[in-house]
Image 1 (tube, chains in turn green, orange):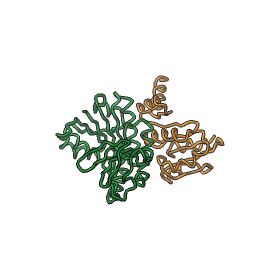
Image 2 (cartoon, chains in turn blue, orange):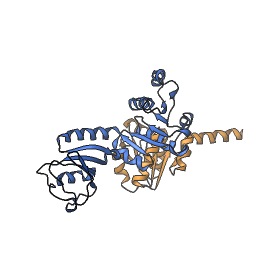
Image 3 (cartoon, chains in turn cyan, green):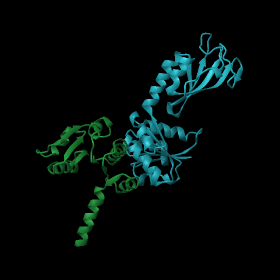
Image 4 (cartoon, chains in turn orange, yellow):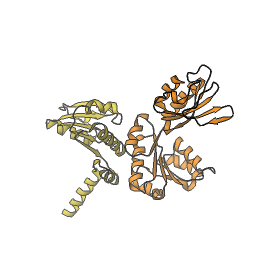
Length: 219
Length: 133
């Protein structure tokens, strides 16, 4: 894929390096408006870095936005990231646009204004810390989807769990949650109405963050 | 009319003074307190020190019915973000963003954001002067 990254700060730099490595092997162009930064990085990036204001049509055109699959705006200014994504979308061949959101409160606005995906560092770090804090808990988050809105969690049942010896059909799951697998010893059971929970079962569930507390209480 | 002006620069301040003289209710916001020195001594409108990109600073003004909002800081991208957020969240009568980059101004006009481009106006004026000889 051809990926244009605007902003060669810490986020943009490391993202570009990562995407260019063997494992990913993407073609990358890094756009940075600070000449000193460009000079410093040109040894490393050669033709894959250019000095320009990425929030202008001219710069994006020069970077080859017309054949870009993805445009990522990683600058430290939300207003620049928004404009970069918006003009990339309407002036070129509708690349996928991803914006870094510096102020988490702008995330919703970006989505409403047509940015395909926004990533908030603050929100992610908070979520990870929150997860670690809960790690001592019996409900272990395995996978986070949709930037933290949905999770797959693992719950280790014990003799005292409320749902032990009960069948799924007799339980009322909180809305926004579903059991996806029961691991019993070496066996993986895809649960259905007749499945009865046993002590020592590991239960995998898909749950919306908003329903997590209700599911925790139920188990 | 009730008008909010974000960015009390050379143009914003004069616009604020004129509207105020014309008997309109004017609210001016700027990050920098010093910017209000550009307002005339007679200016009777409200001055708010704050960041126009942060909703807390504009909400108290825009929660009341506002006829017009001008986003006219010295940064095009800031003006465009303010204008789009305000349109989405508060729906005042009219929202105008000042955008110096003529191409950007054109794009956002297409996207439904009303823009005024000082660069285009100066060029138009210059060309007219040239034609007049």
